[in-house]
Length: 250
Image (tube, one colour):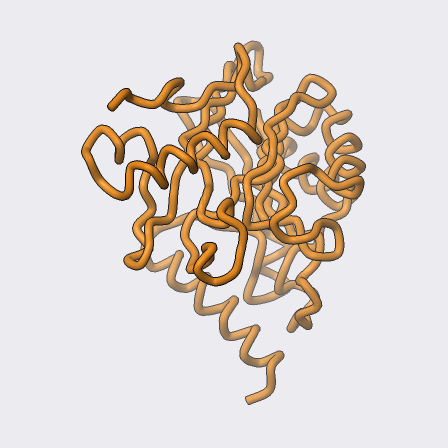
């Protein structure tokens, strides 16, 4: 079996697994027809929220078919956002995977390529917020053109760690919560909360740091160090808050 066939099967099997568990998804597709007709819009407390997903590149991996993966470009994303709005979306959340052609792995500062793309996207009234992943490390949350941009959520689950010769921050990640307000058919993000998480090894359990410390789970020193790294990079302000705001004492 050639590599292209393997990649196509991986994409298709992932989609089937999500479908069989009732999980809406976008960003990769089994056919051109599925790609053309796919707009994921979820009703969240009475507000129609569209989710769009892309990758800037595939780290040199051949793409099986033109429809297999959404490749990011500002024009494509804005065209899709416009389509979502025509289908009734009151908010558009854009998810971007930053590939190796735009950002080195483990880099915790946004690259020029990242900044260029998010500045162009956030200028548009079509975009509500941007959430990114890719470099296996957390990056800042910033407001650009009065829109919130989560540059990278880091790792959720992985086998990466200093034991594998990688940076300590490869075990760090966060779950981001966007606080939104809808007024007159328009939705805006008023603030962002984030839960620092840590991939505990060797069992690869994803631990929300504050909750794990409260319950006495995991290595307290490693958890505390992870929280400090994440908050130190991601930031903390009136509208950007970690959960918990402070680590429990003890």
